[in-house]
Amino acid sequence: MVRFNGINHLAMATGDMDSTIRYWRDLLGMRLVAGIGHPGYRHYFFELSQNDLIAFFEWPGVEPIPEKDHGAPVKGPFAFDHVSFGVETEEMLWELKARLDSAGFWVSEMVDHGFIRSIYSFDPNNIPVEFSVNVQGRNIREKPVMADTAASEVTREGPEPRSDVWPAPEMPIPPEARKIYPGAGSELYHGTSKKPL
Image 1: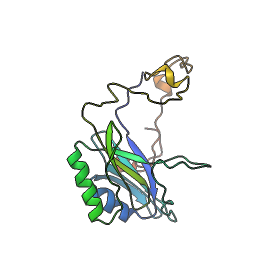
Image 2: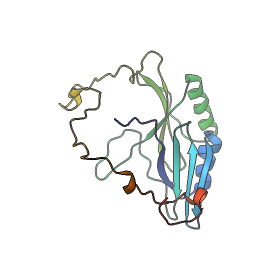
Image 3: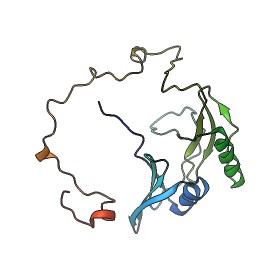
Image 4: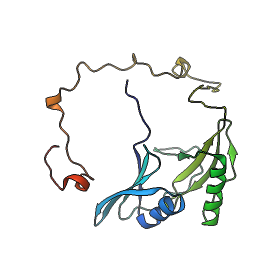
C-alpha cells in the first residue's frame, strides 16, 4: 500500500502575493523556497516542514474570500473549510498568538480539543488558519478514538485502510509507458522544453 509522508503542498490562491509573502514568510517564519511565474501569473512555495509546503497562485482579480468562522456549517457548493498547522510546543502556540495579535490579525483564544490545543486566525486572503499542538499522552495517530454517537457502518469498520473496497489495478503501468511531461515549475531546472522527461 502507498505510504504518504505528509502534504507535499497545499495550493491556495491570492490576488496579492506581496501581502501573502509578508504573512507566511515574515510573520509565520516559513521559508519562501520556490517561485515561478510571468506577467499575470505567479506560483510560490513556502516551506512548512521537511516534507510539507504551502503554495499560492497569484492571479489578477482574485479577491479575499468572505470571512467564515472555522467549522461553521454552510450550504451550496463548497470545498474548503480551514487548514491547521502543527507546532511542536504549547509555548510556540502562545508565541504565535502574540505575533499575530501584535501584527494586527484577529486571533482566537486558545481552545482545548482534548487531543490538540489550537488558536484560530485568518491570513490576508481571509483563508481560515488554525495552529495546533498535540496534547501530551493523547496521540490519536497511535490510539485512534471514535466518539461519533451516530457513526455510519463504514465508520464502524475501524481506522485501518481496507484494500477490498476498490478494484485493484489489473496490471502495473509498464516502464515503456511511463512518460513524464514538463509542467509549470519545470523551467526552474529543465528550461522550457516541451518534450516528455
